Image (cartoon, rainbow, N blue to C red; front, top):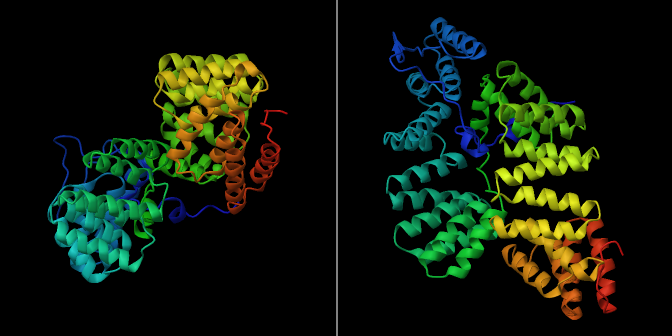
Length: 491
């Protein structure tokens, strides 16, 4: 199998750690250790470094000693120091590279980002130098705009971000930051407008919805603020603008932490075999890390190596018995293996240890629903909505059963409508599956004309999304509503 390309998997690296949402393990010199430089050469203390990291850095340092006038040798050493957590030494190496090759964009860019991450105001000078060398590199313009915003230079931040939008108006991040700039100026309504423009570009950007919730609160609009908050919970953050230089930085990493980062990135992009190779490399160094063992279990599960996946998650739980994700992952595997009682026991243990988390209730409800125990499933979903923060998955599962259960005692059309309308408000009546749910709820409540209207919308959206299976199912239900009959699950 062809190995997936890391620049595709890992967008902004630096730089990349924040984009991947992963806690970076810094490898700094111990207090009192001899960090800094020796004869102008960055010399971090590698006593506690992993052997592969120490070997890679030693090789690059030897390259600098052999060719001290090479900007590339200095820059490559800086990149490896940077990605492995030796930030001050990395900045020293980047500075030397910029001195030797002042016209090379990457070294000025890496130095600007490193200084910015360290909170050093000198970063602004280096962002300016980098822009003089390459004025239209989107990740640079975003980072520069953010740095200017943080420094209170709002006009300059506005200029950098507007420049980026002129080059590419399809990016959501500049709108998000321009919204924050406007709010910082005291123009809250203007900030709202920028954020809404960004959402027209990327409607399911959870980060923008989260900022918008705060803006609506400032504007005294609590209803809109709550909807925006719910959307922020429902949708993921949009991530960062793809950064080829950031991706190149991550390719220098040989630490176990970076094997985990790359493994998780491969897994999330649908490349479990590549993920497993990275994760096994990390496991050779860190055999007792529960987080790593759980991700490895997920990769094995994606490869249908179910018994091995279960064993990996069980090992993770021996190390961390309260590890919610591993507990729930093991419960799902046991259910897939037909071991229903064991699956439910694991999910219930997760519920008891984390009673305000939605996922344990969802697992328990799904297990009951899949085994024909609809009344039990309803109870589990209700418990979740009562004890956990509102979760659209729980609400949708509950509303569907209240609307479509074959048993009359389980149905409640008005409650199904209330829940379905709340979900559709959150996703802005744009998701075919939730419009299908709303149509079923309207039909159970006897509102057949509205049911048919919503089902037709849902089928149209499903066809546009090329989800032919969903569209066909919705159209079959639409025929029932047009005949003034409700839909019954399994009927």
